[in-house]
Length: 453
Image 1 (cartoon, rainbow, N blue to C red):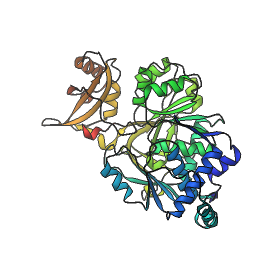
Image 2: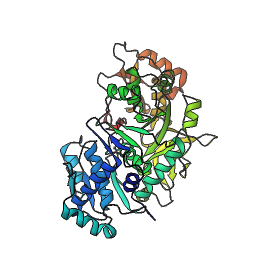
Image 3: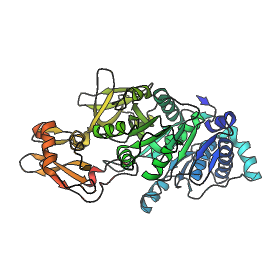
Image 4: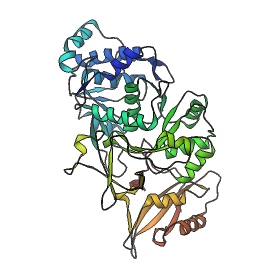
């Protein structure tokens, strides 16, 4: 199925509306469209065309957005590269592409390039061409929390259905200003840029997450929705964020969101929508609807997105199907096997309890690290915690908690164990609590790298 190119449609409908706002400058949709057309002409001159993979090794900002949309207008496949990766890792990703964009594309097309772009547009997906919903739009590399990053090919249809499902859950007002302080090389950040173009709304792009800068943007009323992870939400609350005037919700995912953190956000007047998603599902799988967030600031997990199906396998694994799922990620049974463990409540809301690969087997009993972490995070002196397995001669594996304490707080291992004893089964209580001075290792998108502990 063919649809009108998203950026061309947005530029025609709202040419003077701000498409992208960054610390250095802003572009309207007319300006972004012109820049993307010029970039597409340049890419075509360099050998791009339908289905050609192009690495985009640029930081979040105007140049990245131009290159992304230039790829889409040229019919090429965007392959974002996280510029913070080691050089060898960046080179490995780039080696699988035909072209590398590591400098801003030109802002204006040459006469020759523009003429070629027009002549090739109808045949090879050149500027202003339609998008084929079955065609690949981007190759995104997973954040690699439990294994080496893998490449996931997402189609235009995957992104479009994800945007539609998100709009059903959260709305898409014409004055939306969606804050992106996530890496644009990963699906959470990239989807904001694409989703905003589909909606013809504004993406507010920060090159990296800075708690004070994000808090200032929220206080100033320049943001209506923000994508966060639990760690960044906690840092905003630590920075004193309270009652941001225009924030409809802080969409928070990337891992478990502790109940204590939700209570803190509620007390500070920060509305939180919990989301669960994967790269293979073009970002969101389930999201707390905005109506429920308004009714209950501590609202829990949400139902699957519109047209997304979720099923729990016999062993507790979360299975996902629907038009947001990357075609290459489906197993023979027609489901995406997430390797995450969860449950659906009586109202069909999804609660994620952990990773199947991270389950600790202690004395024959299965222990979810996320469940134990949630119990420990209630302790007021705990800033971060990770629960891991340690080899144990008696139990096979024992439960160990690694705790980063809040600045100025006294370590309280005994208090942690007491909390756990009240909230957990005996076999889930850590056998030891280890203090750690430095922050826990995380991916660029804020997910805990448990395998490095």
